[in-house]
Length: 109
Image (cartoon, rainbow, N blue to C red; front, side, top):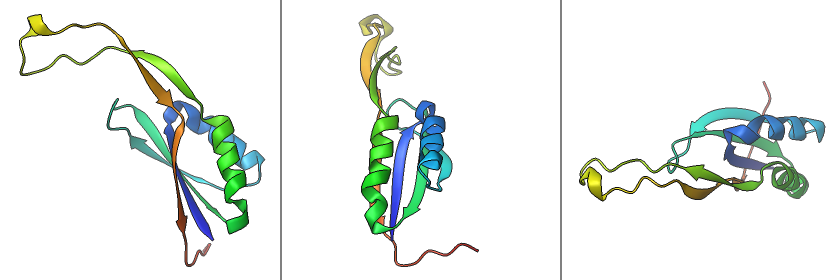
């Protein structure tokens, strides 16, 4: 038994949950917040048999794509404002960070 823990961008979470359900997997969605961009993320927990891990990873890969987004930098608090250049910066967002953990036991009650 494995626990697939996928951290995805909030924008992708609805599509991912729909795709997982369509593929026959049950999942739990938890709201979370990213550290770098401080934007909404979602943590998806999926319990599966060992042989289903690659299928779940395939669903995550198809659903959660990396894309570029323009972001306005946050002005520094300590440094002088005149040294700050407020140009938008391209950053990569989306995709997923996935952990696959061994589970000794799982019960539905």
